[in-house]
Length: 354
Image (cartoon, rainbow, N blue to C red):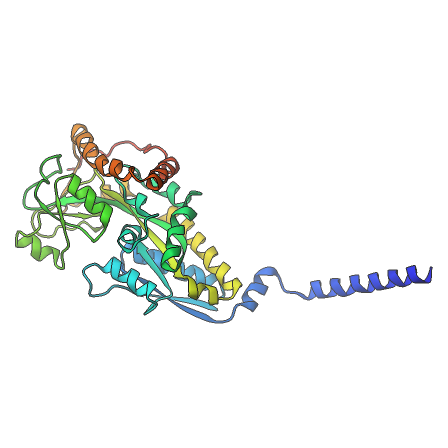
């Protein structure tokens, strides 16, 4: 009996000690902040200040700061500066550890640096609306796409939808057709799959350090860009708004060696902030139809809508790039997964402009 009573006393004492310690702890959020030492990380992006991609990077930095009670800071700066292939230069700066621990870089650029799991995102006719892009970016297939970054020594956090990329023509070529891009030099950023799509339309993808000068000099007759970046510019630009080459996504990644050195609390904080930023971007970013209406209302901008027959002909040409990619079994499975996540392009056609 004495032994049993002693056991009860010990258990009661232990229970009181646990209760006291538990009641003395701060709330979970405060514990996270208290255990987070001051950390400053550098994030590079090839996007210019004021562009949608740079805004995504800034939003992530702000979310990290708020979540950590300003104990963790992410400083955003321009990457790949002064380089023609600035997307690839930004990747090199990240993987070589010269300037950044983190980077936000377009998905289109990674294939040229040996990461193949993101390439499906740039294939034509798969993602043609903002709603489809939102579904893909939030799909269960995203970890599989980001997994390819591991071979480059990187850990992927998220994929962010930015916007559709279209063809703008110069020099009076006008609305895009299935034949009028043939033999024309098209300014395009260094990216394997978008370049293949331009070639499927008959164009010759080239890089340019000064687009206006090249257009004025007759060296470039078309370019790939977005509605939000369309300007009056030189050479009578006309963008065909209802034909998209591909959807531009941004990829947020960190060097794995840098990530592994961080406290687990900070690691989780970064992941949570990346997810929070994605939710905000999906909810708040400018939509394609809004950009179309704004461009149509501006008499200085040349915006056109191709006929239904022309759109069908152009899509048939671009699908050749998609079918070529399907020859690889892994890419074929990725195409099916992205297509399933995207769902149907359930939006009404754009009205005629001007």
